[in-house]
Figure 1 (cartoon, helix red, strand yellow):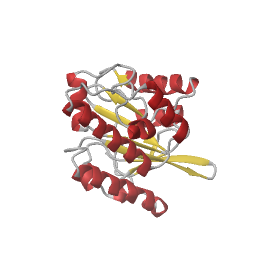
Figure 2 (cartoon, rainbow, N blue to C red; figure 1 turned 45 degrees about the vertical axis):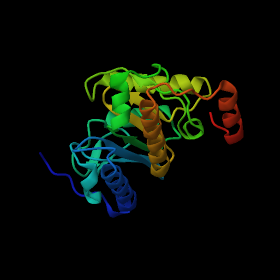
Figure 3 (spheres, one colour; figure 1 turned 30 degrees about the vertical axis):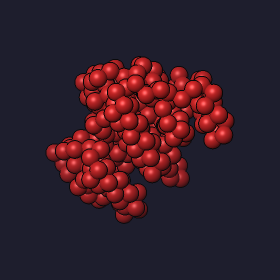
Figure 4 (cartoon, one colour; figure 1 turned 90 degrees about the horizontal axis):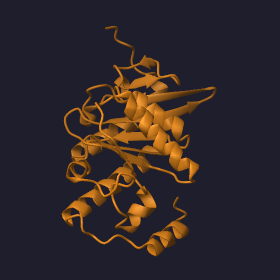
Length: 229
């Protein structure tokens, strides 16, 4: 296999941000081994490119100069071989043009939730905390398929588009037995969504999945005050 050159220096700052995010997630147990992946969409005059973690890379030990750099069509230009999840990430960016960062992890409590049984397929968790409403929102379950399967790519894009048609902004989906895909306008915001979602799953499981949800009136008040969709 031909080794592609290091990514150009102009992309090292966002690449380093990916490395720092990966190291933080790894250190706190959101990912293990070589699981998980991170990408960002970068706009430049006349073109869009994507930076993404390589295949089988440990997020705790990424090298900025060896991240994969792809063009708008998914053709790799620089770095180590890109993760097989690149098609899914690009489908998320295409379905939600506001997204500029995508994070996938195998977070313990979220994967465990799918093994125990989610609340509902259209919403894996009930709304039990204010910040879950404000920062995360509804998270649909994506049915199990072999990692990298095209049917997951199609299913995720479809649920994002269906939500948009109802004036709803999704920020995450949960892939059955695998882990969440979260996205937002920046890496920091995507990481905040992931952390809040994982913490909510932990609360729900620790509470025996019997915690009383917020009432519709309480949820509506949060949505109105914080302009949550």
